[in-house]
Length: 629
Image (cartoon, rainbow, N blue to C red; front, side, top):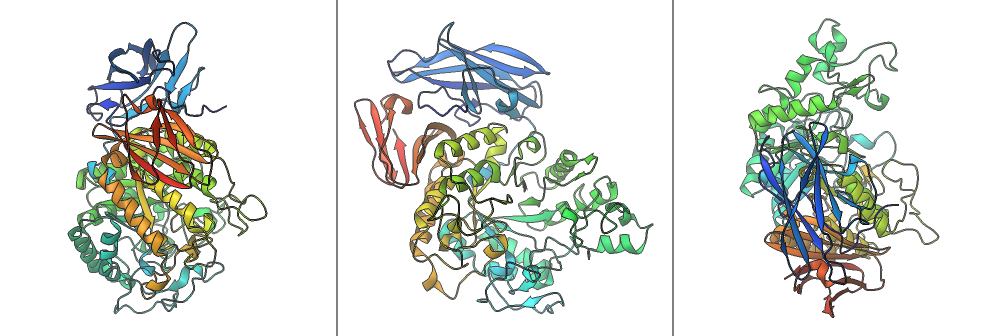
């Protein structure tokens, strides 16, 4: 059975509040701190705290010392020397001979547990410092802003008017061309300023035979339909003038079948590009293809020449576009990159991309797309983080699914992020258990370097998941607004980098990823859901204003069926967050869980009450944030 959080559990995490010192120095030392609240009767929560780290593959034991105590609890500290590039550790917390508790990154366990949930420090990780402060905004370039270009319409394209409905089923899906350009994106950066976003993430911009552009015909040129190379440079310049970072999207797993490399490989068996792909009679199309899709031949990462051109070294594609204005890369299908049959070069590829970044632009961010559990790929000097579908999107969807009038799950035929079942409706205890299990299996820096998505260009809109409609338009009636904004509150108050998909702030709906790629309705501001837009402004501003939300640790206090409660702790401030999905009973917590002589000042939402050593958090739907003093 999972251990549900208790407000008086001992706590440690990888944040600066609990790990003091430079975690990037191999052979260096850091101070680990553990907060052990007193029991409800005021007796000490521990008489002994023991560090068990793994050093050179063998457990190493260290005795923590109690360095201070107060009316609410005690602080314990112990020094950890970072002997190995990846160090895992846990704490034994005991009140005496009959008390045996392991404190790991997944919680408190009154039994032996595997090392899979241990805390981890990677000296190789070195997340760029700016990343933790970002609020991202994702743009699908063909559908955000339109300007005139001289580029001829290609034969594969189906030109569409801006207000024409998106086709999301059938063969025409990838070919609808709405005419969005990178200059069109630049023209609307004021909108990102208005929201408070600080990072612009573009889906692919390279020339391709589709509007999603994950079937690139070259990595050397920006699609003329988007304005070409110069338009990307203009956008980078404009974004930086607005104080925005700019992230590109690169496919290292496959190319399009019309890619320059693939055409040369087909034309000449002796061409060097032949080794970039895997050919053979055993493959359906005569070559390995991503999910056996003929138009997407899979790259063979055993080719050193392909690596040199794409990602390894100063002359690679990765390096070239960083020099031309990008501040980082999101890598498409990172979980499958380098994995083909008996080959598993995924970690080597990630490390080589990271090596190129460290050489060319050491302050750049490297983010991996991974649709399920990415933790095994986040341990070494490769990806800084992942799109956190496993640890954020999936549990939030399960908790805030709007459900159907006649039973559990959605009535709209939505699948559960690739699974052919309705999205389940689960209690907050299950959502929190998933979050703790996923995040407990990765280094803290990997969690902080990952992105939180309520949805993306590859998923249904969260507004639809929350029950707000399926027609692809705006949920102006606000049917799904309440649950949508609970999700927004979670997204803006948890560790990681929140990323908003263009149009979510308007209340747009969609039943799948293709449906979600809706042209931004600039000409119809009367259709925007203004309460939702204003809520996005409020929550983004809140995150930017509070360092605890951007860089603080996370301490779970409570998980119930309809509410979850946690602290975000930073040396400069502590915030209490209480989220409720539907009206429920008030949650009461011992005041000592918040610290000695704690007081509360409401920042967002309804007031909490403190009396008689107890904190009472109301059960009204929404997310409340309180400053702990």
